[in-house]
Amino acid sequence: MPSSCQDIRAALAQCLQESDCVMIQRNKPGDCLRPPLIDTMPTKCQQLKKGYGECKRGMVDMRKRFRGNQPIAVSKEIEGGAQDPGHQLYAGKPAFSSTAKETSGNEPIEKDWRELENEKFRKGL
Image (cartoon, rainbow, N blue to C red; front, side, top):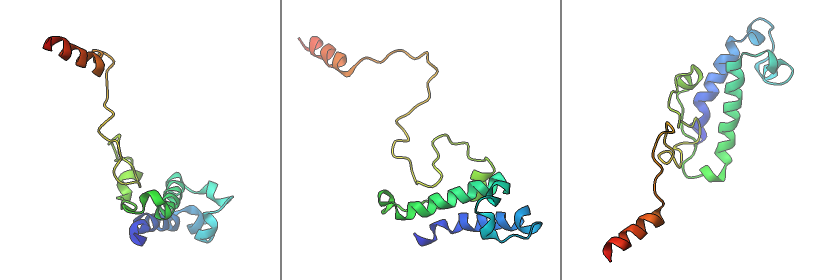
C-alpha cells in the first residue's frame, strides 16, 4: 500500500520539472506547489497535486484499509482517455456500479413488487 501513490507522484514530479515555474523562473518544485505560485502552474499539474493529496489521504482512510488505493494509469485519466462513466480514479471498484442504468425516458413504468405479489395471489385463487 505505501507504493500505491508512486505512479501519480512520479507524474507530478515530471510535470513540475517541465513547468515554467521550475524551468524558466528557477523556483524550487516545493515552492511551485504552494500559493501564490500554484496558480501559475498548468492545470495538469494542479490536478496531479490534488490527486496525489487524495491518494495519500486514502492511505489512512479506514474505509479503504482492506482494499487500499487502486494503482492508476496516470496518462489515461489526465489526457481525457477515461470514457467509462462509472470509473473512479482512486477508490477501486464502485460499490454500486450495476444498479444505475441509463434511460431514455420512454420506458414503461415498472409495477411495484406488491402489485406483482397481489396478482400472483389472485391467480392462485
